Image (cartoon, rainbow, N blue to C red; front, top):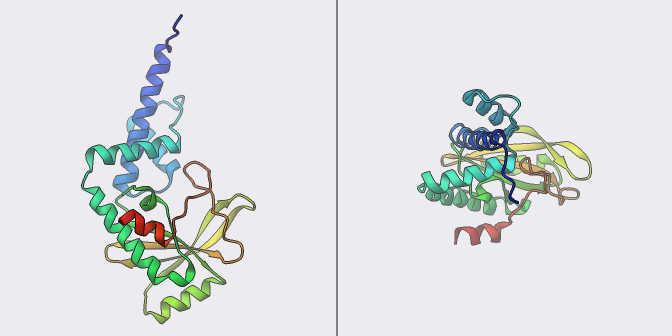
Length: 203
């Protein structure tokens, strides 16, 4: 005997799907990186009851992929452009063993034109002096990331602009930074791509 879902469960599933799609639009169009904030905005805009379970971060990311595949075919050209910027930045920063991470590696383009790299240095000052020596204007901040062994930690961040994109560098210690931090999407270790892998992506 085949059991079917109760009608209210099917309705909640459809609402959850609409929420995921709206979250994806918010992230893509407004450049929001915080999934929790995107969910809050989507629930408010759609007037969804608090009893309906919110979509997972993975569901939202899948909706992002689907929206770009169906509605934004030109963004493949934009993605290639951002990966080319990543490649140039990685060659420039080769001494710091850069790795590409985040949306550009995954193949997602948002209105926030940003290339995220993980770099490795003995101290953040080492990288700062390198950029100063090359007359590269930059900004310094910090980012809180979750690691598998030590919980949440603060990491120095440097940003500079190449063409129309922001290159975002999170600095890890050469000694202790080999373990990738956890992804804010699924909680798994973040995927990192080295220079040769990015070259293959573009090729």
